[in-house]
Length: 243
Length: 243
Image (cartoon, rainbow over all chains, first blue to last red; front, side):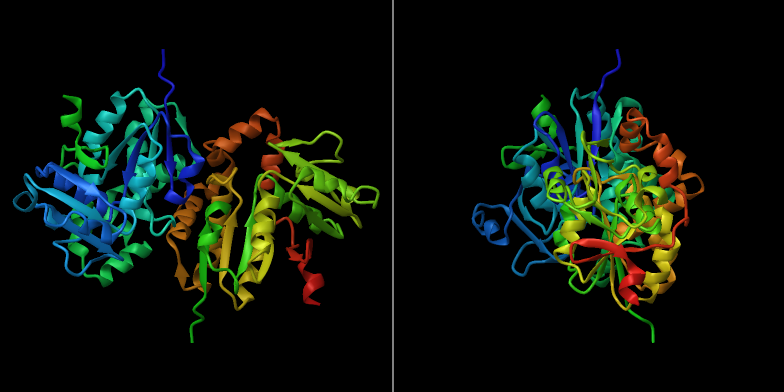
């Protein structure tokens, strides 16, 4: 008998209240750069990443040996160890460490998802295949939650949602209109994601910040196996939860 | 000097509060079927269309010689003259008449736009070219407001927004990420809009309602010249306002 699972794409956190996720896995997506860095950090052996809402919240974790990471409007907040550039989440920097992180869009989306979903995991191009293999095995509906930019739609998160829909098309039976749109945009863009993203507004913002190398990094496919999962208030490797 | 006008696509009314439209023209879009029928009705000589929020609001207009139109969940509400099928808005039915109309999504979007925009007009494939020619001549930013389905994204309204973006690309200088996505989906779909919409969830809902002929009708290009514009609480032909 066919498994009647549904997959939906929520294009911005401002629409999350329209979806019933009590029984669903929610995948939080903030490709440039929060969820890419989270995946990379957990893959590189970080013990945990604690997403917090406000820059000031990070300070509650000072003097505990944690790395403090804060980004606002694309830049590292002054006085913090680092922001959300994936290059800050390398093995030598994060292995065995716990990172407290706040970002403009990604951590907000995470907290919103955490308040209502059965399970919350982190997606990025870096762990696309591992994530899809895992989602395929779950007996749950899936909501792909794009963090967007200040509650508006953005291209890069939607492209990744489309990549997941495309990968899972044979394994799910119900697809919403935003799945169709996201998948079609992904299929248009997939041969050269970076060129496609040059059309995006965020890409212009990022160009001004001189982080083109970050963008290139975040668009790499399947260089990580880790799937960060939210347990309580912390992101930890999924394997720790499953075993 | 180049005119620095911007064009944005608001994918659902639930995101409208993110946009500053005080100085903008807002185009309300509910392709299946409210705004298609409004355009067709005004083009066919209706004096005015009065959009109201609630089915009960229509009753305030009873006994005034108005036609009463009410649709909920795709069907005509019992006891009303008609709903939002474009075939009800033919010349012989509406010429010289005023229609009071409430629909599931379109009239709500109209009221939301009316509360904050400089000017509100109605778009559909039926008046695409006339609308774009007029928008091109305005010295205002444009927001394309998709009515969606119960505050969620839908394909048909986004396709139309993409068609407008495509038509106006040379005349505007600022485009948001949702413009890029809407235009690319439109370019994918434009050679056979009807086939493309078979992918959509609303298309399945409409198939169950047996209104495939309505869908075909609403996807016709440029059969109307009229641009309905909101003046006070009434939609009237734009020419009346301009002359």
